[in-house]
Structure formats: structure tokens, C-alpha cells
Image (cartoon, rainbow, N blue to C red; front, top):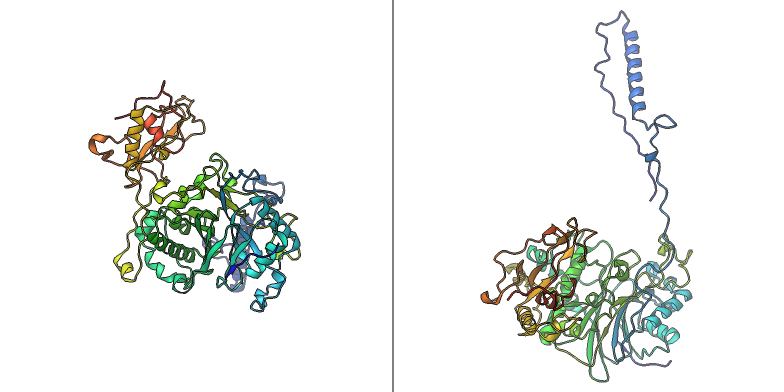
Length: 573
């Protein structure tokens, strides 16, 4: 239902299991002149002595005799105090006219009105969000300043409307949508928007079925993802645990954006999440097949780290989706700057169709730092021990800015890592499974914006022309990367080590140590560069490599030192 505008670790001692000593070796060579009873008593005493000695040898040595102080019990780990652990508090400015798209898991927003559908263990009144948290949530949303705010874990449309009207009435969120996600706990995905909402629905019925995606969890697809599918730990659900919400907003100038607000199953359910991600890929593929230039974002809490298969299904999909992280405001920042959850993991994402990715504003993606409770705080006991004042959620909000004034087509986006073709086995095809549609074809010639900028002046025209042809043929240059801590472009000490630079084709995934040449239709080396399990090329010692050529620089996306006309090596033809 579309909301219409309304008014304003403990140490454990080691326990030893004594082994019963063998009786051999304690029998006298000749039997003494004893009665049978006396002989039995002698043997019993001897055995008890041996047993006691053996057991004593197994006990840890205590006191001053031979004590090893290095094995003393470890001190308990000091809990991490409450504070802003992740994200940034220095939020990038929003450009005039930009549209800020954000996602935020607000951790069980419940109102104080009883929902008769929720009772027993799921009683909603006991889940009512405290006044302190409501105020903190409102403050974080105010700081975020999103134009389209996608939320997870909201009780209902009525709850969202009450929260908006009571705490966010001056933020311009005249439009909202929140629909039942079919989840037993009663929470759902929602949207607050400053732009009019033109449609809202959840993927239910056949669209919510995920069990048929099992046919796509193939060894071939796992190989393209560089991982292994999860072992089924029990039968996954037939459908999404929480139906994804699909909301379309339209600006006064006609810019249309569709957000698929997602909350994949939490906990130790990798198998289920993989099926949910594969179904999302199918749904998105159908939308892009109907309109390759559609502006679509799949946003929310994936409950998957970037290396998990569920996240990889979408991040490296043949649909060619863009990851908002690629537009981060500071590429040199520590990983904590882009961590989204109190557990120290990245769980929240904004992935975009090629057309929407083409409209992203450079250096605009950020994770907003918010207060986290101390690391030993138990959220299950929040009623008895509440979180500190200012605590809003266990997730940090994420956001990226879009330029709606220049609605570019999908072909304007050049993905940094090419999507791969996903084969569908005959059995899967017979079961009705389809491979997701490929990303829209790249333009015949690389646009000027696809070449890396040079700040020190213009590159030679011949190099610009050659770089353009290489890019059009799919080739990108991966700059040499430092391996040792001492490696730096200005350090010529031979002890420093580097990963070699190489060429990679975004269309064929072929690699080449030498720059491809036009004489053989930019075929590249006959043999690929041998990459290790982490995707790293061979490394070598000997100090910093040579400076990149203009062509290498123009065809790269990051790293290296900018060439200058006076010292740049001659580019290969």
C-alpha cells in the first residue's frame, strides 16, 4: 500500500584422562614364598603405586617447582566501549540537484500500538522501540539527508507513518511505502521519499519462490564466482523469508528510479541466502530485458559479506551491476570506514543497473558512522540493560548520490570488472531455470570519459587514440601493486617487492603480460598471466617498477604514478 502524503571467552583448565598402566614389567622374576592371598596383596600394592605415580606425572606442575609462567591463565578480554567504531562522521556534501539514495536497517522499529496478529513470543508491545532510540534514529536520518531512504525492519506502514509524523515531520518525506513481507516476526521493508512514489509492490506468489534456484547452484557457476556453494544445513524455505519490496519514484523532471529493498535471511543459512540472491538476479534480469536502460538499485541488508557466495551472485552478475562502493568518497581509507555492522562485517549494499551506475556521482558513496553499544552489550537484555543514549541501530546507514539531470543509457557505464557468461546445464534448463541476461553491450568505441584523467597535462594524441582502441577491444591495464611494506614508487631499493602490472580483457577475461598490439587485432600474449588464488600476478624484487606509459595510465582505473611528457616511457604501438 502506498502511503499518501499526510500532515506535518572464559579460560578452561585442562582435564587429563589418566591411562591405566600395563601390568607387564612389575611381576618379580621368581614368585616369592607367599600365600595366594599375600601374593595378591603384594600385586595390588604394586599396581596402586604405579597408578598413583603415573597419574601424578600427568598433573600440571604447580607452585615454585618448574612452573611455566607463560602458560598462566590469560586475562579476560577488555570489552570495547561504546563509540563510533565504523563509517565516517565527515559526511560528503551533497551536490546541488543530486539525488541521495540510502539504505538503513533500523533494527526493529515498533510502535506502541498492539497488533493482534503478533502474540506470544512475537508480541509486538514488548518490542516497542524506546524513546531514546526513536530520538537517536531520527537524528541519524536527519544527518543522512537522503532523498530516497530504504529501510529494513519496520513493523508496518502505520508504524512508519507514526514515526515520520512524530519525529521526522520537517524532513520533507511526503511519500512512504511499507508492505507486508510475509515474515513471522512482523517486520518488513519500507521507503521514505521526498520524490513521489508512483508504484509499490512486494515480490510474492511465484516471484517469491526460491526453491527452483537450486538448479542454478552449479559447479560451473561456483567456478565463475571463485567459491563454493554452501552445504545445505537443513531444507531451505520454499520462498524468500522476507519478500523484497519494489518501489518506483519519479522526480518532477521525469527521472525514474526503482529500488528493490532487500533483507536476506540472517544467521547460519548461507544456502537459503544463495537461493534468495539467485532469485533476485532472475527478477532483475527480467526487468533489464524489458528495459536495458532502467534505473534500478538492489539495496539493503544482504546478511552476507563481500566474499560470501550470496553477495557474489549479485556483485559479479553477468547483468553488469555497479557496486556503490566503487564510488566511495575516499579510496585510501581503512576498511573500518566502509564496515556497516557492529559485528565488524560489511552486510549492507547498494548494487545498481548499468544505467543507474552511469548516473552516479564520483566519490559520493559513504557509510555513515553511528554510535555502537559496548561490545559486551546483549541486545536480548535491552529491556533490563538498555543501550547507551544516542544508540540507534546495530547497522550503519549507507548512501550514494545520483545525478538525475543527465539520465544516461546503460552503454555509458563501463564496468571495472567484466561480467562473465553463466552456463545453464541442460537439467536446469529443462526445469525452467534461465541464466540471467547479459549486461548491455559496451559501446563500439570507448567514450572519452572511460579513459583515466591526466592532471599534469594532455597525453599525446597518438596515445589517446591507441588507448581508446584498446579500451574498445576490452583491454584494461592493472597497475603494478606493492607487495612488501617498503615498496613505493620512489623506493629503488632492490629488497622491496612488487606484483607485476598486466593487461586484462573485460570481455574475454584473457590476461596478457605485454601490451596487446593492433597488428594481431589486440590478441595479447598467447599464454595468460598466471594469477594466484587471490587473483594476484607474479611478483619480483628489485625496487620500484618503471613508470607507466601514457597508454597504460589511460587504460587503468587506479594506482601507479601519473606520467609526464618529459619522463613517460614510449608506449607500445
